[in-house]
Length: 252
Image (cartoon, rainbow, N blue to C red):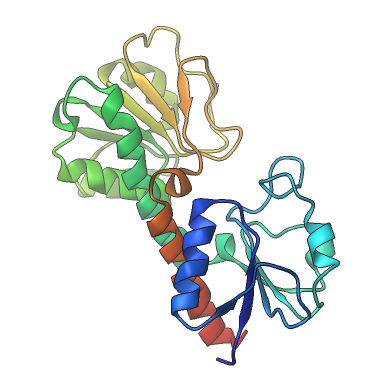
């Protein structure tokens, strides 16, 4: 890989750690725009709900000061004005997504633990969704001897869950089984049932890990972007490792 000059403009601790790891791997870093810049490092995810960078900056203003030959690195790099740039979109990389799910699941337990007055062994848990995060959560909780139930849409997934030793339910069963659980993790952005938890579930803890809209309700605890909040160094290392792998593969 040729010498790379990285301009990190992300505002999160994860981005700062990523830049540090990339510097250790041989990237040169700069803190100001320059015509020699080869890579622009943004936060992951990159944009807020207004389409601005997470610190409120307009990315178009930054790009005007940089060469068109740069590689833009971030997550969910969907704006049309980026179509003329080479991009590394980490949220489209299967390897990054799988490892980030594992970090997210571990962080989710950090969120839940202070809210419980019991151990996980004594906190029956319902997980909504059998995607990457749901799989990682179920594995971690089972290692703690936590009784785990997973709600999955597909019959094949429920069969596999039962084969793995988990209790499996379909989504329409959730209102009936919820009262049997103390803790709930939602990982499904578009819930196939009313998104608010049943009013009769008074003593449980509901944590929403899904992208918007996810699960709604006055008692639901939103917990998005956990790796950057609870494990920024691990998050930054994953970002850096993924960038190095992709650059090596694609010679960017």
